[in-house]
Length: 402
Image 1: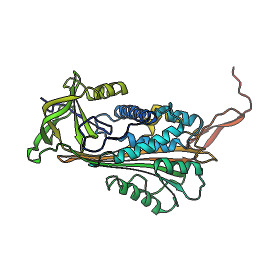
Image 2: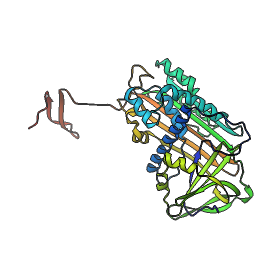
Image 3: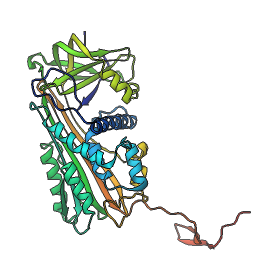
Image 4: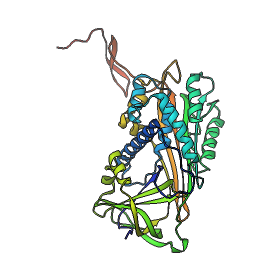
């Protein structure tokens, strides 16, 4: 019997292939490179999620690993040297050639968009650059061909530039993500690489609105908050162990689903998330089986926003955010670095199904955080800052120690 325990639950939206009964044509098999990329994206997504949860404790969190991967995947094509290697390790794609990465993303986009006629999936990419700059044409052409990216130069000094970009994001997320770029664009900003994803799927087996009732949701601190609890009985794909209960709710023809993990009363939600490794995930997903039961699930709507700079640095991409970043395959003169990775999401779960959207913007700036290595003769001054009195001055031609 499946019922909501007096503890916080985790909703993990799985954009994967679930083995359910399908009425639409069986999709083609993935190539080895495509399988590798999917596994890499999932591995990156799970560790990204774990890292975010460690920073965002006692908060609602909702991310799109696929959106982040695609935005960074486009950016990866402009990286070289140590920056490229660091991004490959962070994104878990070191085992693929750049060509395999690009070809796999191209075919994966088409597969996800066309897979289930009863589920609407939109994936759009774009690159917006400062129009007076000349970027590497090969880089722009790759993003057009493999990510189907809109590539456009804009006058970043004009207030219309941010409006143009934000309107594109809003249009490609059906108005759910209205703004991803600041109204005034930084004078040092050279480019934005943006991914937008929109998802709308009706449950294969909808909840009866007449059974939705007022109920209580138990928070981690022991307090309760009112909620609208949906109810459904029937046969579900279900799995449980000593740590959690899990249920899989299909959309449309069953290719997409929502997988819900509910920790046991004795299990802390964050400690469960720490166990979301690729190995555990695959084992859990393969353990689902049909069982009869009762599900009670609260309706909810969530908007979420996060800068991923510190998270991605912690995962191994620090060089891409520094003055040592190498994006010369994007802009030959160099001097570019990632200044921001902004991620915004939206989700609405109700009796009919789920509507979700995400946008990820990688902002590329000039200059980068400076790097200063004092390894040649220098001047130094000891001063008092209130009166601006100089107490000492000196020149070091050769450092000595006594």
